[in-house]
Length: 203
Ligand SMILES: [Ca+2]
Ligand SMILES: [Ca+2]
Image (cartoon, rainbow, N blue to C red; front, side, top):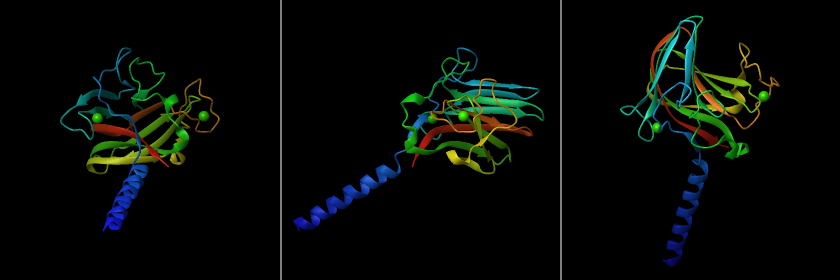
């Protein structure tokens, strides 16, 4: 009897350990912030050439914690939109929950986020800025209703060829640590999106 109990305990410990190892992603941003843009704000957002964007926090629709990031936007042809969080942005308080330099990047293979869709068919770019200032892009589509987790494998990001910052290293390599992520509904779409729970996915 004792042996059975011991084996059961050992099995439970083993299974628990395996689950922990498999599900041990790193939450880097949960948007539990007073959302505001501008130099003193918490979200670096803006738009141009006729597009508009407005960011706030939502407490009625959220995936984790007490709130999500709500983005109301109108992305017109020829216009642009960005909604960014991370290190070294013009907006002073836009840092993630964890410092990029404190992350062991070699342990992770992807970055993921949750988006609350409205089946608008909008294309949404998810960009990351690497350690050399280079911008990499992953595109997803709002073709569902409610929360969905989007997993962006690091090897699926494409270097943006339409635009790069002046000071980007442009070496064609995704250099870690990643410093910034940004959401950008692409031209030809309009509506409301909610984002939450940005995580790094363990290898
Ligand atoms: Ca949250
Ligand atoms: Ca680079």
